[in-house]
Image 1 (cartoon, one colour):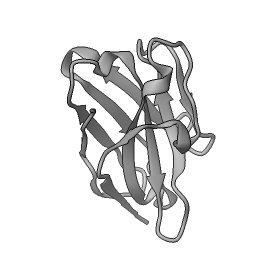
Image 2 (cartoon, helix red, strand yellow; image 1 turned 180 degrees about the vertical axis):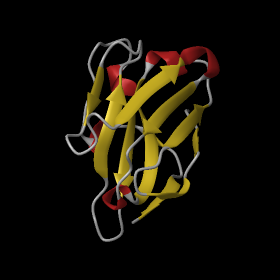
Image 3 (cartoon, rainbow, N blue to C red; image 1 turned 90 degrees about the horizontal axis):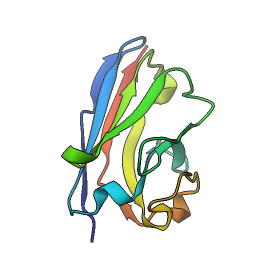
Image 4 (spheres, rainbow, N blue to C red; image 1 turned 45 degrees about the vertical axis):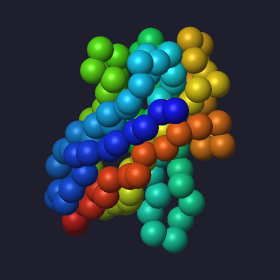
Length: 128
């Protein structure tokens, strides 16, 4: 069982920055690929970024590439999403998720169906 708790969301002006954190329970956090997804009102949950178990492989949605950075600290059982140059269209609830199927593998996946555990989400609102 893996429990995930996101934090760091809030209200920010366009052009600003936020850093989201996702704290994971369990001793095996370092084995799993981790991802960030987001869901805006009336829209489906979409992929944002993912990172492999070692941190050596990352992937980003085109809409955030160059502005967002995903990272992880396995000693702290935490994955981060640094978000810079925020835009109003980044407004959404952000979720972190764990992909147990990609443990110890140097690849990441974009489909939310591949992720086994999810956090409760944290709201990010970007004002124009």
